[in-house]
Image 1 (cartoon, rainbow, N blue to C red):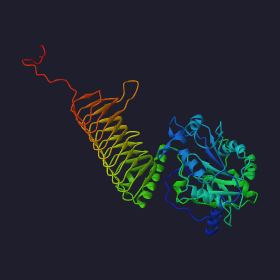
Image 2: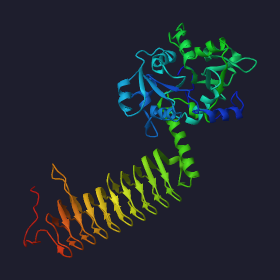
Image 3: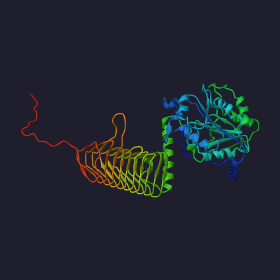
Length: 489
């Protein structure tokens, strides 16, 4: 990213745009209402040496999703007509990971600077009116900030996103003339003592008229110590030609913070999680400790939801009103009904739980588990591809797979459905009101009738009739006079 922001250690807020606030708001309102086509280029070809990883940097996860995917989402939030990702290191792996995303790809085979990277994408911007440049390792940029950048630059041919820092050491400075107009960007190593006092820095984000940008890129040279083509040189070209360069700044400096190493990645993760936690609490969710909560997907929570410490939310999760989630739980792609309590150390994945149920502690609901209202699932119970009816209880040390359990059923401790013969899976059906004794094995395919009772320790391989006691176990025998073997000396 050249001289753009590379660390997440910021506290300053954005300063005012060079345009009046009322005018920025008006331009934002107009964005997308004309026929101007916006193209977005995401530069994502960097090697990421400091990550010390075989995984391409832009695929490292933040909040459970690749860095690059966050940036793609922001680009889509601007209603871009074309999005191009410039890939390089690990390009095939990057493309494979995001193969379902709607974007075009351009390769930067040699890493020769940000300007060179953008040049690779320009052939795919042929019918765009404006081009905006984003970065695949700057994941928290918001669509709102990007729309403001678009609006700020709507009346000129070049717009920049800059930032104010209390300590700008190491970053390219934005230099302005006596009238406040941007003239160029100077790198720290090239800056004079007075220029180093400037606190406004370059973030790397820009938007420009596509035709003018193409011309400026064609004039870039690489006469520098690194032998690279720097996108920042475009700024001085535009200013020299008399182009007014509009600027705006982000609401929060973390929006323009990039990831160079795992420390910075962790900083951005905590910022993201803190912001997500605050949004949830303002919407009415109680978090026992916002610092010990991780949202790695999307959470829809109704009133009076309570979440204890060390809970991880992944995928799409919906919690109805009054749901209580105990500590150390993982919820992934699930729906939990009103008033249900999930006790400590539970894992719930691709499952649905009804109202006023009690789950756990130490329970696991696997994909296609469907629990009705007022069900109880206790400690060390695993349920997979199984429906459990109204008010049924599965309280201890049990596995139910590929089963249909009726209403009002009691499943004793240690019960298992033997659903797999090594090649195929079969279904177990348990009727309403049945009682399954402890340590029973139900060998599918098998049906236990309504109101039936299965004796403890039974292996049931044939259908058990309704309202009857079925027992299948060896007869108990006591061998009198038997002696336990003794070790020979």
